[in-house]
Image 1 (cartoon, rainbow, N blue to C red):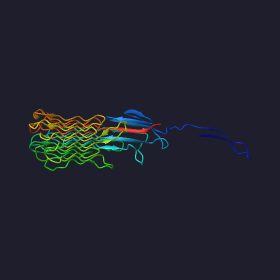
Image 2: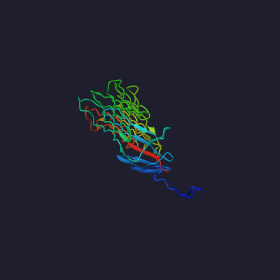
Image 3: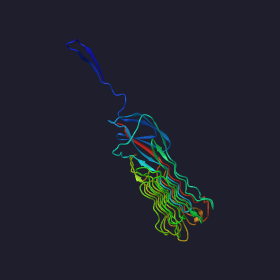
Image 4: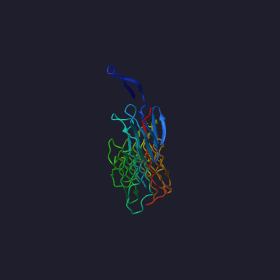
Amino acid sequence: QGVTFVYVDSTVGWRSVHENQYESAGSSYVTATGGCIATSGDYKIHKFTGPGTFTVSGAGSACGSNTVEYLVVAGGGGGGGDLGGGGGAGGYRTTFPSPTTGGLPVSIQSYSITVGAGGTAPSGPNPGSPISASGSGSSTTFSSVTSAGGGGGGQSQFPFGGSVGANGGSGGGTGAYAPAPTAGGTGNTPPVSPPQGNNGGGGGGAGPGYPAGGGGGAGAVGTTPPNTTSTGGPGGVGVQNNIDGNNYYWSGGGGGAVYQQPPAAGNGGLGGGGGGGKSGGPEGTGSAGTGGGCAMNPGTAGTVNNPEANGVQGGAGGDNTGGGGGGAGHNGTAGVQSGSKGGNGGSGVVFIRYKFQ
């Protein structure tokens, strides 16, 4: 605003003779570029399915908008091999809908985005070598927010034993040949508030079923099979979040594998978890675990095979959902089993939402 004054005389004094109104140089709303941008009403939504940059050119104001809401999902863990546990879901962190404290303040600068890959499931350990969990997922970052990758599912190796699921955003389920009872991997690692995930299901014990634990999900722990004739442990369910305008679930855990006699392997958790593999045999083929749906990209189902020597694989976590991979079945051969791998974990994703008008 501009005002011009003139001095008339000692009696009249100063008087305003001209007044102008100027538009503010800055916008009252956040303006930004980067990623795949969609519009929903008065809001812009930026989606990042891979690495990128969120560039803020206008920081806005409290009268319009000066904060953003986000969903940051990490990569899910891979499922374990040879009656392996389900992979844990990638860490899940969000401010949507905004809490009473508001969203994340932004300033005029560029914010680097890293989207975590899903954990890779190996073919299994060599005979006699140390038995470790399958590959964990990678972390996803936006600004000061980091979601941790999901823990890999515990692997087994007949007849040498099995491993616990790895810690992570959500923990991986424990493999079937681990000593009984063996708890699953610890979720919300490293710890944040609110928690970014849950623990994986326990596993281990004797036959005839050898059920493995399910991977933890963002919304629930992975299931621990209650006895040795139970189905493989289902993966923990993810959490529903419609920041992108869809009622999708995110970060579902992978299903645990099972041997011959139980009827089915564990299903992947809603939100992209992969289904567990099921070994065939004299008792019949049974059914593999289904992939977790209600997701941007559903997880895939595991396989079932009779004869099992042909290979029994776990299903993969859904791309860009943070879903954990399903555990692999058993093909009757000790050690590395190229035809019986756990499913790879699903990659992560970032959504950023703000009011633009």
